[in-house]
Image (tube, rainbow, N blue to C red):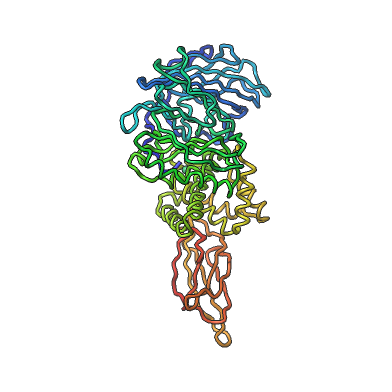
Length: 574
Ligand SMILES: [Zn+2]
């Protein structure tokens, strides 16, 4: 996603005060709300459980603030345990079934623990949960900014649990089917491919009654729960174009293309046409730079997400407001589309590695604007990213900040702007061909799966044949950035020749590392670059001697702009 959320669910909600229900129960009243966005304890999440598929039926209306749901989960048990702990909160549970039979369960503190009735490692079970109520979060049932009723899910980071039972963690990706009963005048969109609908809803379809239609969307590619969404509203749908042709295997079309479309409120089609016009070009750019597009289609949806944009797999949601004000949101579009590769197809297995999603989307969208609009555009965007990070209040924290347990707070200048710069620096260290072949290998190895930072490091080390431990450690696991104090003097030799002696001090905070970093130094004379040499600064003081046929007028430090740093030039030419 892009931009920090506008509202957090208040942290003041107490955990459920309801007494622990007897395990024999399979119906439960609506519990008290839990706090959204809290990081789980460190370690493997829900060990021994692998959700393979979510089959979720949802009934909504344009007159009720409540909905009904039936979620059927196919779950592989990989270790022996007596209960299946599902994340779920805020809704009344009407029925819990295991392989079709009434199941015992307990329900409190944001967990629905289903008794596995003797099933164990190696078994695959089917769990059905029927429920209803007004969601505390995750599924917005309300009005758009013009007062028209809408229904939109918004799950990041772990708010899917507020509208369907799940293993609500990015380490467990699964396929999903959504069957949605919604007002007939609405359009319904979700992940994957439309396999049925709209058709008139059955008279006994779940949820508030009314004139409703049924839509069935199916996502055949495993995706994280934080991108499993539905959107239902009065929307105008239009196709922007075809993209990733020959490189979108999930579309299962003979031409291998994926359709790029938009779904927007009727009064906002003009802004949508401008904002999404280059969508197919953006998708093609990432496809050819990184690898195949993973999903069946790519819908771009004006929605009630709290974020500027939310990269839901194959169905990106955008904030309703900028489009309603007629703004061109193309920078957000390019960012969210990059997430289809990084975040969605390759998902960070742990929240604290969020830069694998946000840093990548930030950097690859800058690369798109370089490709489409020229290098000056790229330089301007990277300079903005640099300044946002340098001026942020997170420079004393590392990018991989395992002590931060408020997941919303991870949406910061470390994950986005510094993360983008880490990629840019890695490219500067390795060179274009090695860097991009490493990126492609990383993507190919983890597409439709998950990854951690060490997986990226391994791919880059393999591509380059170099040990990059020092780079990943200092830039991602330690805080800050280097402040270089650069000075030089001329040591005359014979005739006009001599040696430029360049001294580089690292003067950043003592609590930040002294960085080891390859940097280019260029000798310039009469406006021309006479000589460029790559040196490696290391430690608090580095001295380099560069021979030259003539005394330079000036010495440029990192003239290509590859390093995230602050530079002070002192005593030049002395
Ligand atoms: Zn993002």
